[in-house]
Image (cartoon, rainbow, N blue to C red; front, side, top):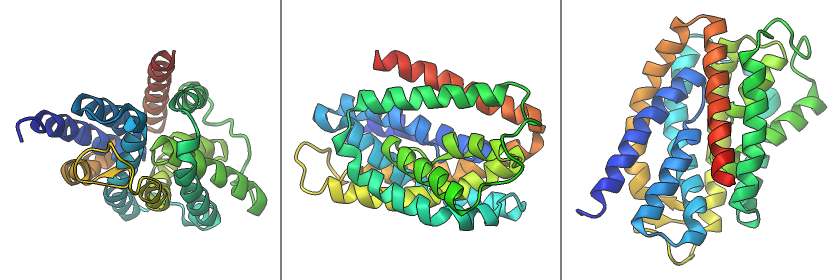
Length: 269
């Protein structure tokens, strides 16, 4: 118990930050949880071959209750675009499940660099005063929505994130107001996390070298500690988001993405 206590304390702190960011930015907190879990599992002595797999799978499982809490709060404020959800949901679910099953085929460095590049570009877009310069006047139709949603679901499941890193900038390019984009992203996170977690549960079944209380590539001890804390913090993030101006929220999200991209790129090299 003494050995696992520092691990649980680290996870609890990361869960509080992840939950707040889930509400503030519409994310599931995975962008915070994945590196925190990675280093926590490394310190705990998990086999190096499965550090990232365990971190990503566990992060996605933690996102589920966090996304539920965040989405409920945004729904009460009428900040979720159900038209987008109906267009994107099937493609998000399918691609997220496939991404969870494909994760073991790609190196962590490849995934890290891909995410860093995309996050940096999206962050720059949000920091610059481009809110009134969307790419289109409306969300794409059936084919365009399929392509966008399939990419968001697959890429997010491979990285252990809830999808807002991609979906919020994408929706703002399609002329969706930032607060509505953030709210919609919270429900998108749930649509990604559920099937992706199933993929990681199946892929990690019977793999040796995982930490105690693991089911597939999901560590149930980490989920039990982090998920309640993150879910409790999500409504606080939602209240903070709706108290900020549209421009300020865009800048906060953009700076957050740029800083994260730089950190991940440095880690990869």
